[in-house]
Length: 255
Image (cartoon, rainbow, N blue to C red; front, side, top):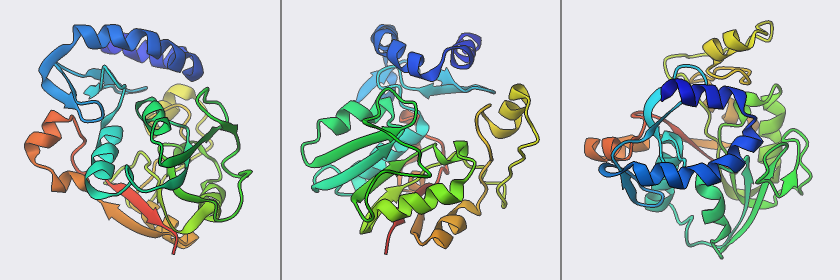
């Protein structure tokens, strides 16, 4: 199954993959029903989760029902347990909207919800993150998760995110991060797609972020909280929800 999922991820264009997933996932979810693992986003339980990854595949990480990964489930639990996200009226901008969240956020009547991306079929506004067509200080909440590692000029992208966020607003800017690496690594001389996937984790990533990511966000002007939310959960919960132990949530505020 791991080889099949790897082949699918690396051969089918992502926009088409998103459309096909709406057809396939109810079938997979039906056959994997069980009581071992639970997706907290929809509270459905399964005998196992699916593998996922463009390079080396991680076992037991993709929820059959919502198609959430570890980072999505961690963020959901944080929002649900530690914030007023699900109750406070807010104007929200969501980059590259994740399937696990998209329709659920759309249904939240207290959210004035806009999605944006250059390629996603789920985007309301087609826009370049380095040149956003939005006003200064426009949004209370911004989600931009696993996007910046694709952007050559991530400094400009961070500046644009800061510009359109309201003072006092919250931006959650997750990235794939190597917590053993102090300094972010990038090398645009590496052009072979297989080699890029091996080094950067995915063929279309342009860097591997290290611990200096948080300081870069602070240099833009953000106040950054580095939240290891798995520390607030029991080991049983981390296992049950198939989370990545020690993953850091970058929760950013505009002073």
